[in-house]
Amino acid sequence: MKAMQKYTVSAVGAAMPVVLGGCTGMSPQDGNTAIGAGVGAAVGGVIGHEIDD
Image 1 (cartoon, helix red, strand yellow):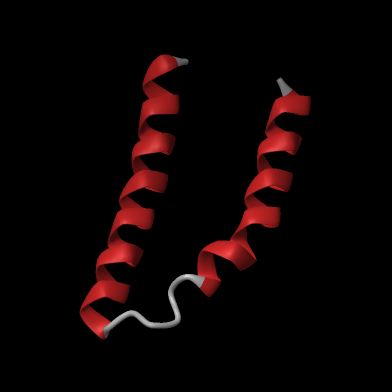
Image 2 (spheres, rainbow, N blue to C red; image 1 turned 135 degrees about the vertical axis):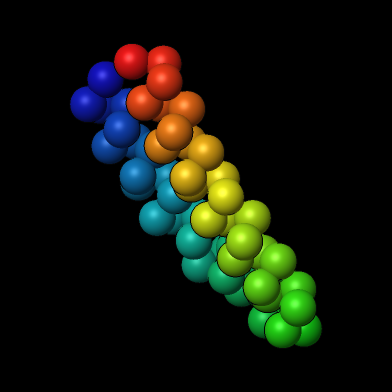
C-alpha cells in the first residue's frame, strides 16, 4: 500500500502545475468554487478512508 501512496503523491505533484495553469483566467468566484471543490474532495477522501478501515 505504501508504494501506491507514493505513486499517488508523485502523480498529484506532477499534475499540479498543469492544473494551476488552467486557473489563471478564473474570476474570484470561480476560484473560490474550485478551492471549495478541492477541499471537499480532500475531506471526503479522508472521511471515506477512515470509514472503510
